[in-house]
Length: 151
Image 1 (tube, helix red, strand yellow):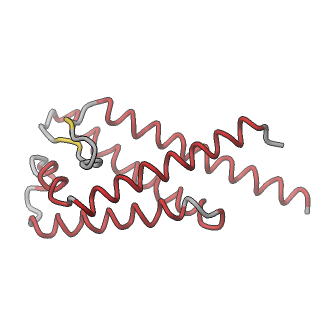
Image 2 (cartoon, rainbow, N blue to C red):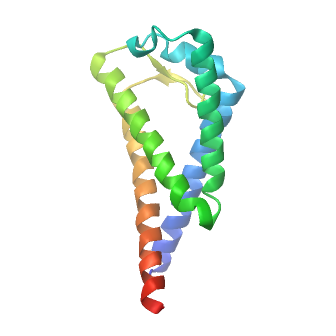
């Protein structure tokens, strides 16, 4: 049996992940060149053609929006969360690579609102979002277990 605060936290985590990924995806779709320029100093992206990197940015933005919409529906929430957590794991790995390497890359995931230098705080923010996703998965799993026990 879940308490009211658990249901409230579950709802807040859904709203947070939906908002964050919708905004990030929209930023990438509206200003793909901002992300291309932000990651260009990173050696991983030196050899990738600018047009290809721009297309990858557009694809990533579309995927983020699709998955964030999937967070809104109970039938697709679990799978959307799993996929968003996979994206977050890649983002966190990239941020840590940049921070540890001391590269001058900028974070422009939310270029519509802000752009800033990548630092440890950037990775911690993504870890916090990932914890919300983990809580959503845990909540969904507990709901499945309760449903099977009642049957």
